[in-house]
Amino acid sequence: MASPRFARRERHALCDLLLDLGPEAPTLCGDWRTRQLAAHLFVRERRPIGAVGIVVPPLEGLAEQAMSRIARRDYRRLVAAVRSPGLTPWALPPVESLANSIEFLVHHEDVRRARPGWTPRVLPEPDEDLVWRRLWPMAALLVRRAGVPVRLARSDADASRTLVRGEDPVTVRGRPSELALFLLGREQVHEVDLLGPDAAVARLRAADRSF
Image (cartoon, rainbow, N blue to C red; front, side, top):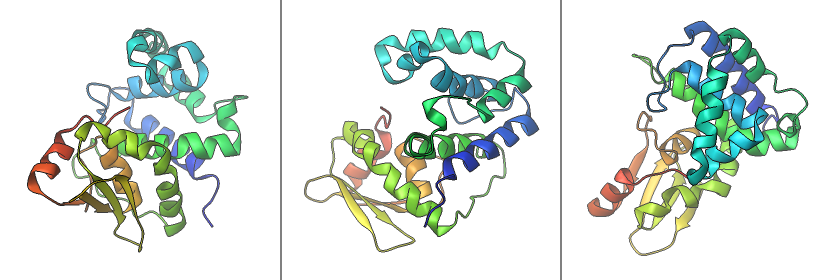
């Protein structure tokens, strides 16, 4: 059985890495440095009005303003606040697992894989199983702009799922943790294969895979 604290372990590992690398290390989140990534995570959990702008594009200015203010804080204190979100719904184990497992896995890898010479981690099977389950609330939304049929398949287990129905789907095959990174638009993935018609594969690769 997967540990219900997977999201917390990823949170703490990310915070350890943020402290090790300092506030100006690169990430895979566009032009964000580690300071901006930490500010994003703080706003998401501690500033409800700013957090609305993270998920509602027309209001993204709210998130940017909140992040700009938070990013000016002392970096070590900012990371400490991300590590311990306090008395918020995000700290409740069911909410933490549902809302933060993918979030902190991906952002942890955003920092790890922005460095030269990165190597993939091997997550325990129960953790991969948990990531596989947590992908479904978002997976179909993430590929919708490609306009092609899509199917996911695990490379480490006999499991697959159709995201978008249709003939000749693109099958995206890999471990769940790597599939999560691909679905959220990261190109620095390991052993993810896209199988299907060339034109459909190209459309899926080029699509904006974001909310």
